[in-house]
Image (cartoon, rainbow, N blue to C red; front, side, top):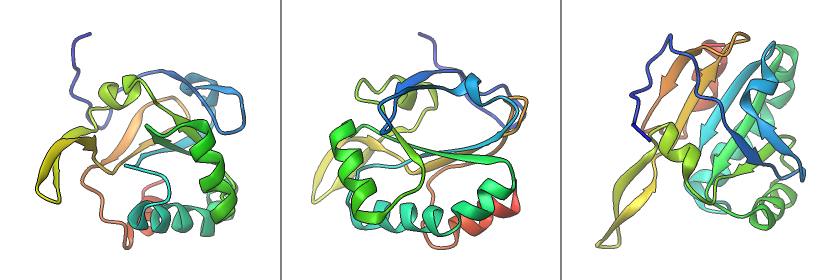
Length: 154
C-alpha cells in the first residue's frame, strides 16, 4: 500500500479497529461528529497516562462539542482495559496490533531509548470534522498543554 502524506484539508483515511468496548470501530461511522484521533506509544507509561488523564478530565467538554475521543496504540485490548480501569477513562481505546492504522496515519517513527533504536509510535493527534476531513494535525506532541490546544482547534 502506497504511503500518502496526510495534510490538513484531506479526507481522513477510513479504517476499522477493535475497541476496548469489545466492538469494532470504523472511522466513517463517526461522520456527523468531530473526532479527536490520538495515537500514543503505550498504555500505563508516564507520558501516555498524563495524556489520557488530560483527555479524561476534559471529556465532558468534548462531548458537549459533539466530539468523540479515540485513542490508538499497538497495545492489546486486555492492556487497554487495565489502562481504562486504572485511570477511569471515559472513552474508547483502539488496538492497532498489526500497525495498519499507525502506518496509514504515518505515526511509526524511528526512536532511540536507553541507547537502543527501534520503531515506535510518535505521539500524534488528528482532529477530524463532521464531514471526515482532517482539520488539524499535531505531530511530536508534548503532553503538557496539548489537550487545551486541541480544544481551541475543534
